[in-house]
Image (cartoon, rainbow, N blue to C red; front, side, top):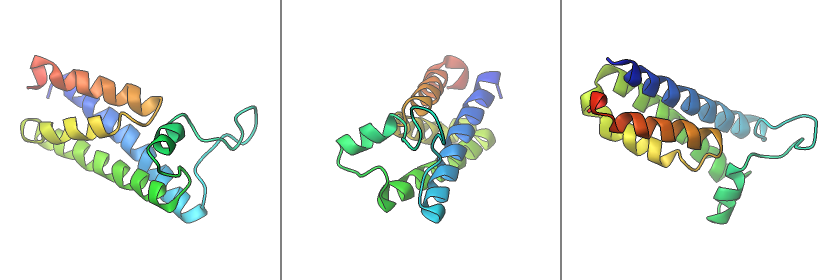
Amino acid sequence: MHWSGWLVVALLTLTGGWMAFDGVRALIVGEYVTPQSGPHAGQLGPWSRVVDAVGITPRSTLMKSLLAGYGFAAIVAAVAFALSPIHSRPVAIAVAILGLWYLPIGTIANGVVLLLLLLPSLR
């Protein structure tokens, strides 16, 4: 696989892994990972405003479950892409599109994934 394919796998795994971890942790402990001190202590990231705008309470069990579920789906998509880039490309594209809401890191990482998946070397 071309280097850009491995970058797709890495970015999907990293962002999906973090989301799965943070979502599962929030379901178990009751709270997401947030800064412990400073001006943003206890605050969620910009993504929380996006989900709140569509009517989902960021700290709800629904959102925690969605975050964990998306994270696991992104990991599965990354593994599938590593094993069969040609056949799993549409799944990787769909997962990357679905992850654009996770501002700012998910938006950047999934944007890069989408750009890489549109390159001729990964088609």
